[in-house]
Amino acid sequence: MLFLLVCFPNVFLLLKVSSANISINGTRGEPLFWPCYHTFSEPFQPNNSLIYWQGCRKPHILLHAYVYGKEEFQHQNRSFKNRTTIFPDQLPSRNFSLIIEPLMLQDDQIDIEVIFRSQIKSTNRFCQTTVYVAAPFQEPKIEINRKEKTATCNTKGGFPEPEIKWSSGDRGTNLKPHKPSTVIFEEDGTFSVSSTVSIIGLQNVACEVYNPTSNQTLTATKEVSVPPPGWKTIIIIVAVTVVAVTVTVVVVYIYKSNKSHQCPQPTEEPSTSERAGGEAADSAFNMPEDHEPKETVSLEENSQLTKL
Image 1 (cartoon, rainbow, N blue to C red):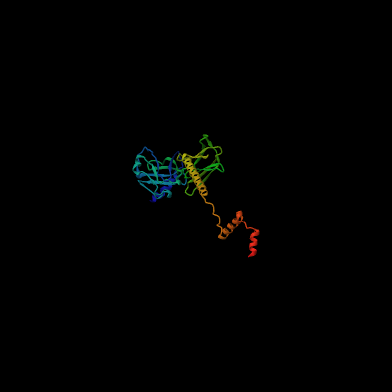
Image 2: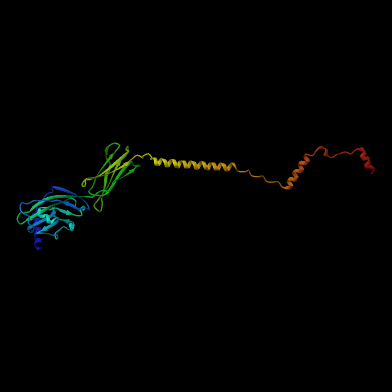
């Protein structure tokens, strides 16, 4: 192990950094298979070989190591602990592929390569690769602001920063955003994006969210104008109207019917004395002529009364 401590720094110092020439894309949380195959003229001797899967940039990051016939983890970078796997039994057939699991956002744009060194031949470098990591965005949602006459497209949870495009189906043309997109870098390393466009004179709008790493496009559409009510809505409106009219007619009919059958208020009965007085008065005014009192007496009747 003392030899490894001395050997590792020497190997790194002897190597020169080269630029990556291929790329590979992966998704956060999923395994990444990095294929690497290389052939040599001489036979592979595990006990005399040093193989490093490391970063190309300085300071060099060691992802995995195979030292003199066995895997070695003492100098492995901490961020790749328990996340890398090779195929030791396939190394003699020149299979230097590596699996990184799970892939993390911090692995994005890391340049890696394989370093092979043996006692027979000088150091070889091959399979230079740049890793790109993607995280899928949530389905975008469009919100309409009729007061400001704008539409806003929102999405989040993805990586890297997406490209957002607007279009109108009724015009078949691309739309220019109302203002620059709002991009927020969240604590978990993902992005939240919001873009706004004017909807003046439009019937509908479409928002496209494109992830350049995963090559995935998510689309959302929204009607700008208020659509006419559907047949279900029309049926509900008609039914409510009919019920309201029917109730009104019934209430009016009942009110008028009760009013027409209402009896007049009886007058106050006169007292007994008032009835008697009234009848006497009527008799005085309607007395016949033969009942009128006589004012004079004849002479014969008067003489007879004198004798008495």
